[in-house]
Structures are given as C-alpha cells and as structure tokens.
Image 1 (cartoon, rainbow, N blue to C red):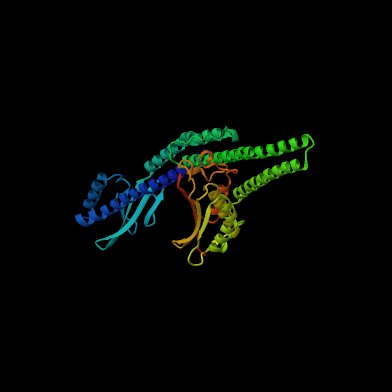
Image 2: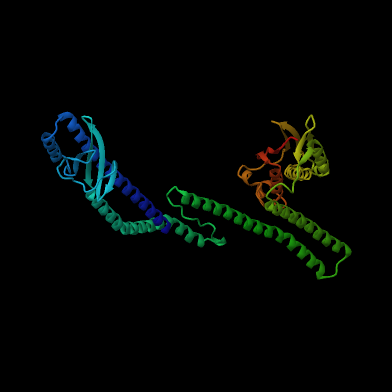
Length: 437
C-alpha cells in the first residue's frame, strides 16, 4: 500500500510539474505572439497609410485604442525622439528583442520607414498570467493531501482485495496435514497468477495424497504378506518344541520353516527392490550397455526348462534371424524375463505352450512372452502392475503380487513399458521394446 501510494504520489507530482511548466510556457508564447502582432501592426500601419506629422499621430492613437493593452505601445526614432505618444510610456530603454521587466513582457523591434530607422516598443502585463499560475499552485497544493489520502485508501483496499485469496489459501493450507490430504485450497475465479498458483498447489497435494496412500497401502500389504509366513514359522517352531519328537519330525518342521523363510526372503528382497526404485531419480543404478538379446533369451529359457517340464508345459524360443543387440542392462533383462516366464508357467496348464520371441520393429528390438494359459480378465488388466495385486479367483495367483511391478520398473529403467494383450481362456502376451545398440 505504501509503495503504491508513493508511486502514485510521485507520478502526480511529475504530472503537475509538467502541466505547470508547459502551461506557463504556452501562455508566455501567446503573449509573445500578441506583442509581435502589435509591433508589426505599427509598421504595417505606416507602410499602408504613408502619412506623417499630426496625421500619423492620429492614426497611431486610433490603432492603439482598438487593440488590447494599446496604452503599452510607443514609437520613436532610432535617436530616441518620441513619435507617438508625446510622452514616453516606458521609463527606461530596453534592448532589442524580448525580455521581462516589472511584471511586463516587453518587445523592442526596429524597422525602416522612408529610409529612416524607427523603434517600436510593445509590452503586455503578466499580472493575469501570474495570478492564474498562483491559483493553479494553490489548487495543486490543496489537492495533494486529499489525493494522498485517496491513493492510500485505494491502495489499501486494492491490496486487501487482491491478497484476500492468498489469506484464504493460507488458512486452508494451515488445516491440511497428513491425515487430511484430501482437502484442497480454494481456487479464486480470477484466471490470474493466484488462480494458477492455487491449481498448482492442489495438483501437488493430489500427487502427495496419492504417494501417501501408496505408502500406506504398501505398508499395510507388506504387513499382511509378512504376517502369514511369520505366523507359520512361529507355530511350526512352537509345535516342534512342545514335546520330544523324532529326528524325522524335527527335519520336517525345519524344512517347513526353511520354506517359509525362503518365501519371506524373496518377499523382502522384492520389497527392497521396489523401495530402491522409488528412491532412485535416474538410471545410474541400472547402467545400459550393448546386450545380445538372443543369447539372454536362450539362457533364460534353458534355466526354466526343468520347471516347465515338471508342469507339462512346452517352452519354445523364436530368436531373431540376425544378431539382436540392444542397449540394456543384462541383469535387469534376465530378471524381467524370469518374472515373465515364471508368471506364464504358473498360469499355463499342462499341455500348454510358452513362447519367447525376439524381433525387430521400427528400429527397436522387442521381447515377447506369449502363453496359452487361462488369460487375464479385462477388469484386472489395468491393475496387474500394481503392487501386491493378485487376481486370486481367476488365476489362482501365488506369491505376494510384486513380480510384475518389479518387471515394469525394470522396463521403465530402459525407457520402455511392458504392453499386455490377454483374453480369458486364450492366453496372454507380454511385450517390451528396447532401443537398438
């Protein structure tokens, strides 16, 4: 408010000074033009009438009576002899040209008439101009205080009005906490910077709320997933220690504990992998290099042949006709393929087939894992990459539901996305394309 009032007051002061100066200058110019007109009128009169003596005095007296301030006009010879009027109007002589003296604007101009030099002196009173400029100064001085008060009051009102949305957003922001992230800041209907600021903060709050909900859901799901194996390990150990048992019974109990511990280890490693991926902001932990995907696919498929044979599922590899070298992280691609192959084998019944293909498409190299299993329901497709998501009824899923989430994170670390095509009862196809090296 103070700055706006000060700037306005400064602008008004500059405006007043400019107006005062230009008005005074223009009024003086009008006076000067009138003086030149009177002086030239005397010369014109002499040249037109061509008279001398008493007749000249009579003509000059009549001319002076018809013009404003004609009494401030005199004609003399260059030697100082008065021609008209008989007594000098001015008490002292003036230099040639325009000057100001004794509250008068005076013009002295010389010319020749009948070969003889003459001097005409014309003057105009400046009292009226000075009175007008004095009244103007008083008006400006008297208006300064009301204008200052008006500027201050207007600036205060405008600033309060302009900052009212900020106060509303501040009060709303003070009520938002982790427990109430669903609240939003009020958005003023102004379409200006404050409206864009409020919308940006609401978008930030929405992202923050989503992140907090994901953390809470992740924590709840992790607790739920860990509760079961921990309970099984504890109950198995308590039953084994309740009374004396044979060596075979102890071995059976320890085998059960080992199996659950391995499941827990796999779950914890998957959770740590997801936590590390959330903490990363770049791909520095997943360096990319030239990798032959044909070789990676062959190795990954050979490692799964025993598991596929035990389930009665046929594994098939379709490598590219020429070397398929892509920019990739070999360990990451191997883990991604292992997740997709385990997922396909788990949900493909005996007698089915799982095919892994390497192909080229639009300068990129693609990997495809296709199975003839039970497929994925359309309602579940948008959620299969969510953490801890499992389609229990339709796919009989095992594990914690983190595999596909990790696979998608690996794919995104390569600048790509896993695409899925699936029809219930016909199988599924998971596809990823990588940049060619």
